[in-house]
Length: 317
Image (cartoon, rainbow, N blue to C red; front, side):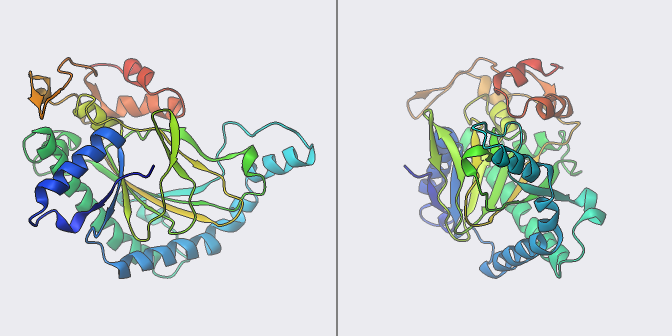
């Protein structure tokens, strides 16, 4: 079983209705799908691969080799223990955003210029995807973007961040996980994953399914806030990354999240009685109305725990 692959170049052609339906299915039935022919040039994507891998080698690898996680695994192996490492991830990761540009890696040639260009393209793609979700959900164009920007039409307060991760070869992948299972806290996530090294899995029907590497595709998934705005029609999905014995998995995840001050709640239009294509959707209010910053305060403590209690724990407004 493979997650859906959608040819995004056909969105504005004769097959628009078909592509819109495929994206609706990807959101409703999977929570994950891959876009090919998404409009981001292969030249730019190749540069992103080059600077990300170069940055790891030049600025990150030594730090990972001396990290607490590596030392903990070494100790476990030395003891010949049958235990697994819990509550840690076999991952090197850093965050870049417009807010921390002075902290971006500075030794890797063309890193900053390339990633700024890439992030601008990804942000436009995220906004296009949110408009598609608006249309598929029967919401006014721009509804999700406005909600994430605190209801503002002009002022952009939503957060667009990018996590640059590497999952280095692991000598004992059965004893540690690359990234523990979780759902994503925010809105729309756009992942540029490794062409060759797999390891990403999603949970579907209680079974872990590989997200197949596909050269220069962008993997899309919906976060917890899209689940809330859609009143549960688009669920955020559990996913994890396995540790791999060979190959250094590169993973660049960008996410369009609400402003910390934005108030998030199910869209009122989705609470009206409605039957769409023979499907009866749940019209009850399933989720509380809350400020996203309050949700994040809960999420940082409960990221790897069951999702539903997070919605119950957040302070309703």
